[in-house]
Figure (cartoon, rainbow, N blue to C red):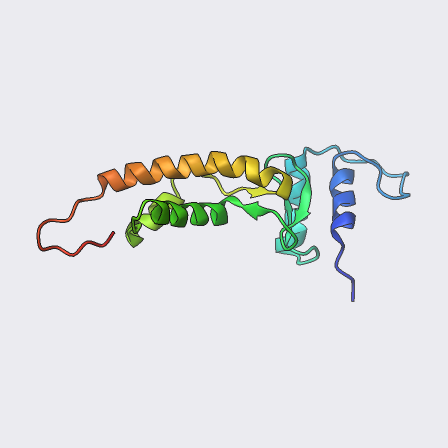
Length: 151
């Protein structure tokens, strides 16, 4: 049985795919892929072949590899937190049918962030989420007299 590679070993493969030396192996032609292309190879080894743990991610901001079990975050989970916080801060219940609409609006891509980049990108993402929520809620039909409020 093969052991699963560590994050450091996967990072070394990631760097090799971008043209750097790999351990003591020097007599091979090194590829020269971009960070996105190199991570595509790692992704296939994760999801397609199950060779590399699928908790290893590439930061969308700085291209650093990180283990999502040990830190970092993704924009989808941050968006959920922001939607919930918006409702609590403004004493508003986000209607269930708008929840998914807000989460999947164009301009809110699914991205991964290492711990170092998470906070910087989180505040930008939060501003986008808040403006989308405000727009969506302003378009949401107001209750008529006698109708139950689902907000």
